[in-house]
Length: 181
Image (cartoon, rainbow, N blue to C red):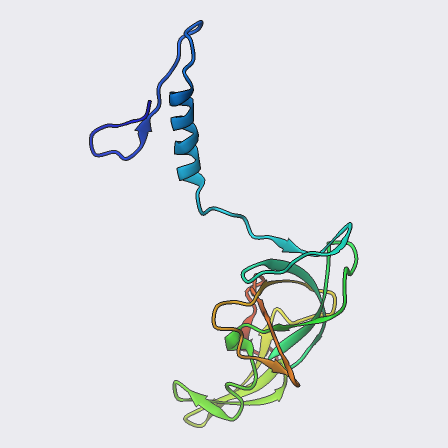
């Protein structure tokens, strides 16, 4: 039987002695306690192909991709199982701060950004100018992990298509001063 003692919310589960008959009620209580501890815990699903074809993709699912190319606000990727592509290319929205459209030609915190490409820009403030690039740079073949249909969407379009995947930015890419300038 589970009992809560003192201020602790951890139940003390009954211990049995050798040759003592086992009653199903305490076992069911133990089962319920374990279920309560693990309720709501679910590891992220990885999306790919199973033996029968595509599996259902739901909001919040996580998938592994391989980078094909880079655009202003999104990445062109292919589903990847660690060895080879497993499906057609998809668009994956860049992390917000790495996108081009929200910042190109605009100021943020007194700094004006002008993009020279999808992965380089100049940052100007009070007469000082700095060339910046995304580090670590995106390289075709890089592994990307992304989440499907995050709450509120990604806010990114690829032409007429709504981009439904969002890069988890597990590599920690960020803008930084370009060396040599």
